[in-house]
Image 1 (cartoon, rainbow, N blue to C red):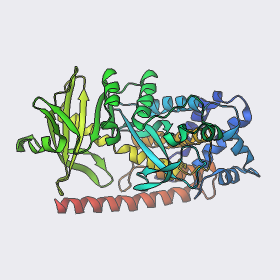
Image 2 (image 1 turned 60 degrees about the horizontal axis):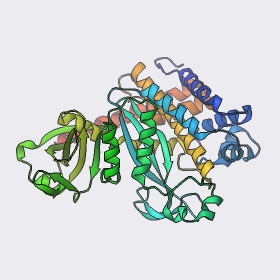
Image 3 (image 1 turned 180 degrees about the vertical axis):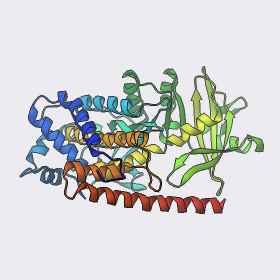
Image 4 (image 1 turned 90 degrees about the vertical axis):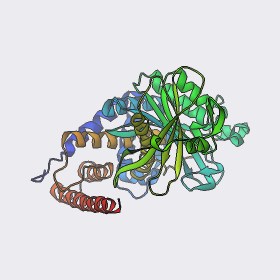
Length: 430
């Protein structure tokens, strides 16, 4: 490697080969096992568009037939690979402050044949569009975060049409389920697998669902789940809207706390806590967040088996945003949303391998930051930078390593200057 650099891509290659060796036993034949490796390497490449055609060309294949066979007809179990992926993420990112974060994301689609597609609201577009929606479970720690499970949302318009489901390969056992039950299913799988975690975070879709909250309480899993301003909160005086309860909080109840560090520094808000009168053992609260500039309020229903301080609930609430970063990097770096498959099996196989590719990047980033801190003047390595270096230095080297590392240092030095400038501006504003 170039003088002055401690980056060693050979470590990333060893980690990648170990990860692929971990899932090797899930493939009955050597051909699909090799194709899965080439598929993941393609997802980790710098290709501007990732589909079976571009991935096959990147792998050196003459046609996309082999990769299409891997996704549709080859014999292997995507759920078993998901279990291996979950174990890998826990081993690499494990931390006492781990939080499970649940959220959904949508992929815009054309036509009506793609499994699960219909006109529905998706946050990806911010409006109702023809789209496919899936719920994901992310494992989030201070070391990093990655998706560990997925459930495709199959609308009622599909489950009520047996011929349509059969054409898309949806198993007969699949029944209509809203997003909170899908979340509960994934959380249950994670807990049954022995994951040691104490908290779950999610947005209003999940916070407003009493059945999901009850399922978490039954497992004595603490939660910090967002709710709407008009959500009804049970108090000793009866039921009251969340925003009305927030107005009753005294001035001394508010504390300035950070919800965690973002790209431009710590995210400071004013926070307050109100006790609620929910039935059952444990401690129930309404957590209120106030924007320090606009005064805008956000609300969270909270539960914990034992009493915890306000600062703990704030940290869990702040961790929910990491799932958005997981979606962004999984789509931007590993092609999570670029699949052009239509059937149930193909969708599960594509997204599982994309999650695997992103989990590798998240683990490599966590290890680099812990083992080889960035020199002065450089921002720490990111998933984006490791993906770029891994693609050019390990997967398909084009230029000398020293050339690539000099460009890496240049990008990170520029990012460090930009971040310092952002910090200075934020300090002046305050």
